[in-house]
Image (tube, rainbow, N blue to C red):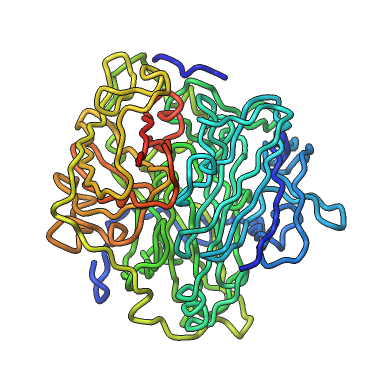
Length: 537
């Protein structure tokens, strides 16, 4: 396989690259699973580390645009206990508080309609960027590899938040090395709020950091002396340990009441199918409240949901009837990974390349939830309508076809394009203000691809030829799942499937604006499964 070439209030943040240690609402939609052996209490006995919560952990920070003083993020080395044995070195964005404490990858808070201003100071020893994943921004603020920040330089990202409330994230995006830099830790979350979001919090009675949590799910591959390792040019880099908010084997002490979990898959390549099992290893249903671009119009009752790299889901668990001591396990439940590209390109040995890692699609425990005896949990009412979000489907939208496929050499392609073959040039142009329908077909001789669009959000208008584990979740004649009813910036496309998305290219930015469309399997991206396009006047 050919390797990628190495290589409102207003407030100011300074971020530094850092080598640091650190079905319908009435029914529910889901899949059968293979239950694990034994009682959950025995099966999960090693989940003993309290979940790190941003703003409450000694390492994970928070930063709010409502604060009066600016926050300065500096570089430094901070060894972290991520496994038994030696401390691990992690690359991170760090902020130094007024008391001199260093906090890593802070969760940023902002309001829709406000501004976000962040300065990156690069001390990595190599090029890097900050990509604002999911945000509707101009090219200069997108943070793609088109505008690398050299070692020793700085860049300020300053933009109005034109997005709805939702969970977004920021991460490194240098061409050819995104997988390595993100795997080693350069990623953080952004929580955007608006009036509809605040109304939901009030209706449910939620308290941030207590029964309303933002969780970054990321698997890491550990090598000798607990070093986080990544091989540039490798394919599908998956880890042998899943960390939730940088916590290995986490346990969360939950109050009896509603528990809201806003999940972001910040892993390089691992696809999760999120579900919750109780002590009898029975699947417990939950409500899906939102996706990448915020709240759905209404909640959907489900028992599992796919979460591809780069995607986010907003989940509500009902613990009101639970007793103190009850246990739930958040897991990735069994699914068919459909890795149909085996035998293409140089031979690979999963066990050798990813020692100790659970293969894609198998059962994988993620986080233990234990109900405590504290009262006062969230006990409000879940509204029947969550938001006014509604986007009409334009049948007259201009269509643009895309094919996702792999060459016999192992090179991933989008149509006949590969970023390295195109030498980074734009491969097509789109008139600003136009609405297009992109029909994205994934070859059967392929694997699932989470396709991410920079600078714009979109809606899924239909799915065709979906595998059973997707089609059985469909809620309308177009084959769409509950996830597909929201605003997205990343969509999972399975082998043999065609997914159609509608994109409104209206924006207030003049001149030529360049963006990327790529697979968010970061190794695929680094290998060139990415194209550039331009929005023009």
